Image (cartoon, rainbow, N blue to C red; front, side, top):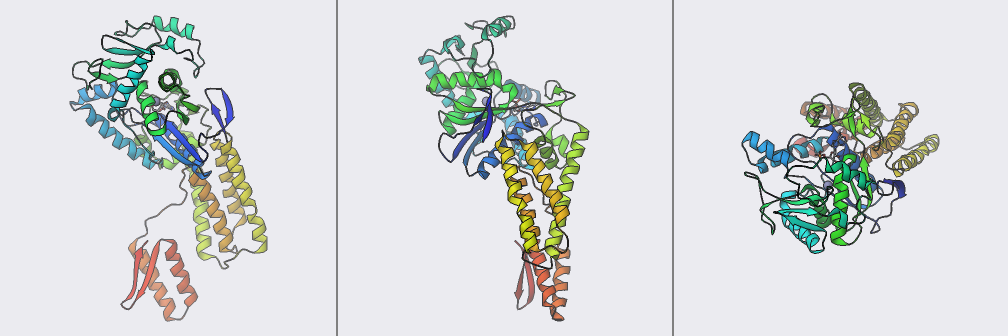
Length: 468
Ligand code: AMP
Ligand code: ZN
């Protein structure tokens, strides 16, 4: 499988550290509000990568953090007159709900920054001991000049950056030895949450969180580190500096970055105010539409959000779901079970489609081409099946479409609520068929009910049923 590595600016063959296993760390959201659909892009894209790697047989350890200590959280807690942990608890809960509705699976571990402070104090201590960090008035800075590889991820000209940053010095950080030095630990201000440390009562900088959580849950060197492209500099550059200077080994082998979700060709962001939350979108669309919309573009291409594109994703999803409904109807009513020779030949197309799907995904997660394979299969289903088709043939096509959809985290089969009254009407009809000795029809109804997830129990007191 080829993955584009920001570190080398090339597509590279993916080779895991441990055969059969993959470790992935994805920088998660800062939890001070509902997530917007820009934040949803890395969640959907890298969840899809995880699913595909599992499909290829890898055991995936997927870690994604919640940043639950931050200026924006503190600001919100002051505005609302509640503690910052109440703010972050609330939005972690909301974020998990959005993830579930987008069919983004929970990470293997979702560490929270505030629960990992000891590890951060320890790593900062090691960096000071090794001469990579220094303390000034309770603040600890990372000394970027001490790290001779600093800048290797973002490929930036550090001298240009230094002169640019000199004029943009953040107030309170005047004592930095170099404009590119960044904060590892900072003292508390009045009313802020704080933890004890050898340098001051205060809190960690943002970058150190990920270095510590990645090491704790995945080890010193991991396979894949991912996030949105805005994180390349300074966040990921700084994570590399901290982790590699502390641990003395490479931090991550592959660095993956998704491009932005834009509106009117500008980045969707909270600060610009041009955003929709996932919750806004859910009021108008099934979130599977949002997922399909995201996956219809390559993750490294900017994606412009528009009503028209969402509407076309909606009709595309309906097209697939209608095809599946139709296949379900044919399965329930098929007159023959086993495939004919002609159908066997025709079904020979299916492995080819699966291969094209894998080829697309193997080419740096080309979900747009992978989706195109699913649409080809939908066309194939619509043209090659009819009421004369065998059950086995129709089911083979349906299973293939659902299986490929599942790898992308797409759910194509509507799980409609089956009403008790519908079930009871079918059971009555089955009893009538049995009474007139039409056992074929009775069996057919039993099968139809089984497909709806209903099991029939013939008891002495009559027919009972249960949902399975
Ligand atoms: P934040 O809470 O801002 O740190 O963002 C969480 C994740 O969402 C990071 O990986 C960001 O890079 C990503 N992200 C934020 N805004 C966008 C956007 N408009 N498009 C794509 N990714 C984004
Ligand atoms: Zn991070």
